[in-house]
Length: 257
Image 1 (cartoon, rainbow, N blue to C red):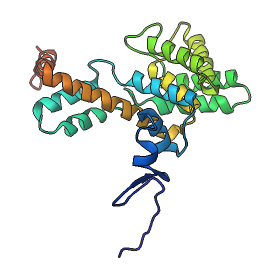
Image 2 (tube, rainbow, N blue to C red):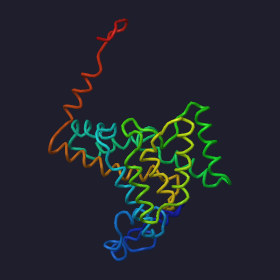
Image 3 (cartoon, rainbow, N blue to C red):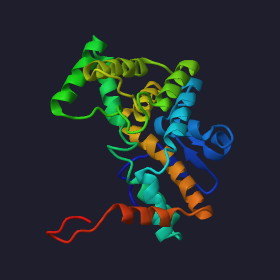
Image 4 (cartoon, one colour):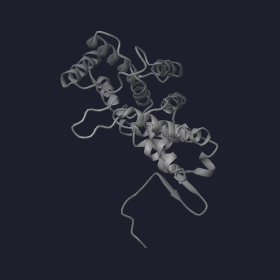
């Protein structure tokens, strides 16, 4: 018998039970917790409060869908190429959750945490903006190519947080950072959905290190929805042909035609 070299407090399965963080899955969790509550419990070992559940649930709904984004296009193309491997198509889309699309929550959250810790939050927000401008870098959680001057998802999330009691120090820090961004730019710069999600999820008590995982959980469900539409009304061929039409070929030394 192999001697254990590590310990897990997450899950253990026996012939007649599955135990998750000390609770029986069939007796204590199935039918007792919603999927959102189970996510929170699984990640933290704690039962979420109603406000934490409502905030996390709203974030999961928000990040689930945003049209023909790179992740959705990748999923559709791979599913059209290998429909026998749905998991491969979803995995391909999840690989696109990164520092440009969807996965910017942790970068924003780290800056919000700085503001929350600072004695003068407004001054810290201005310092963060100045650092980004000096580096020529964009602040994660700000700006959007379509939603201008306001991202409607952000408005909905912050309003929801206030309504359910989930508006806390990180949401206030986000608004302070937004004011500093607008002042430096001389015009309104939208707080995008990932910025709002960062604030709500941090105020719900989840650690910054797992925030991209929350985005992955949500986007996974959305990508399955794109696969379902591909099954009913395929768009893969149109996406492929549009890509070919948009990118011309030029031999070395020739100009593109």
